[in-house]
Amino acid sequence: MGMSIDLSAIQANWKSLAERAPGARAAAVVKADAYGLGAARVAPALYEAGVREFFVALAAEGRALRPLLGDDARIFVLSGHMEGQDLTGLIPLLNSPEQFFRDRALRPRGAFGLQLDTGMNRLGLEPGEWAAIRSEALAAGPSLLMSHLACADEPEHPANAEQLAAFRAMTDGTGVPRSLSATGGILLGADYHFDIVRPGVGMYGGLPFAEARPVLSLDLPVIQTRDVKAGESVGYGYSWTAKRPSRVATVAAGYADGLARALARQGELRLWAGERACPVVGRISMDLITVDVTDLPDIPKKLAILNAAQGIDALADLSGTIGYEILTSLGQRYARTYS
Ligand SMILES: *Cc1c(COP(=O)(O)O)cnc(C)c1O
Image (cartoon, rainbow, N blue to C red; front, top):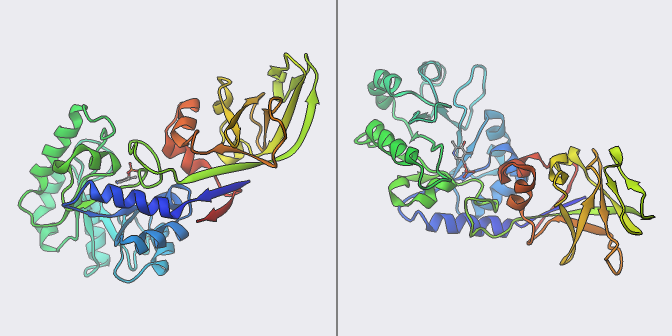
């Protein structure tokens, strides 16, 4: 099974998101192995395109990237300074008074930033905690003050303006570089941009960046095809029964490859032979998917599950999830090729 990743499309998507925030520097979020696409290839391509600020979730992700990027690249760690972590060459975004005091005790000269909670209640210092350590923290010279929007993919949601006001109240006049917005916040407009924006999913071709260039295609090799008589069934639970004499192809990929059983639950999942759509029939197994190819003039060696017609968000709709989860679930069995 093959995953083709278009690095030039990732670079182009990053540039067009950067152009939407002309007053800010555009960083790149490459956590979770660059959303499953391979951080070891994606991050250097972004560096080449001009990215100098990278965000990862965990210190271990940052350490793996450090030797692959130039010394002028800054790698921020969103989980901050957790006990026992090696943060050499990284910039933790400290999330609590406990993390702040731990970090200052262990790395008194190490660069750090601070993450503030403006309403999401997930990570970051609450306003009261910030007030308590603010003068000491500012005196220590943070590289960044950041927060994260909970509802940026819903432009009309009142939480956006509330979080913006809370962020301003906590950071106005500090003189420290600030960052509030991921992909969704970039699209909310200039008020949300501050000094650094942090796009992730939009670079990888996902909503809410509807104008993104597609980045990913997935091809599943056909292992065998067979004729199925009308009245015969296919797969676990015999959940699909042929109404007509049919030709069924079995392809190599399944729920162990991030193609969840729920994708096939409505009977609307298609695999593609070029422009021709072929319905998936029966249940998705761990390593196998069965496809009705009766109407194809000839059977190709492989069928696509992600292409220009069926992108990550279309797949996500079928299983009731989001493009982010499709991307980060695909797993390690695909042979990745980069162009
Ligand atoms: C994941 C994440 C991002 C990137 O978000 P996208 O919606 O993928 O652009 C930015 N900031 C933080 C704190 C994140 O956790």
